[in-house]
Length: 113
Image (cartoon, helix red, strand yellow):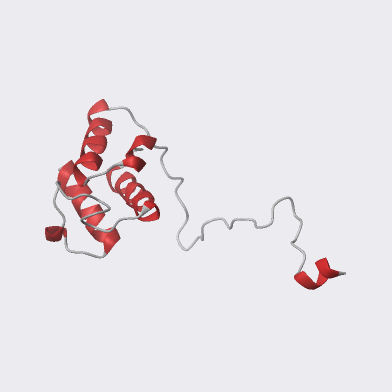
């Protein structure tokens, strides 16, 4: 189950069919995964499996490495993610603040003065 979940997550994040991804594939060499892709893949696996992978998963070299990391977390039986707070119907997620501490960034024209 975990193997299929990981393979489907990798395939979906790369826009491929699950049949095109196998456990022996090297992420960078065979699938063309870069660091950002890998981070997104790890997040996708965490979301699908309801687990939190260790930071070592972000240095995985093969699909099998990701499968092993996910399997270890599932087998540990420890709840590693917080449940999502329920939202009311039609309610939007909270917006992130930009710029920090209420300050806005100066435009290039303002900086030149």
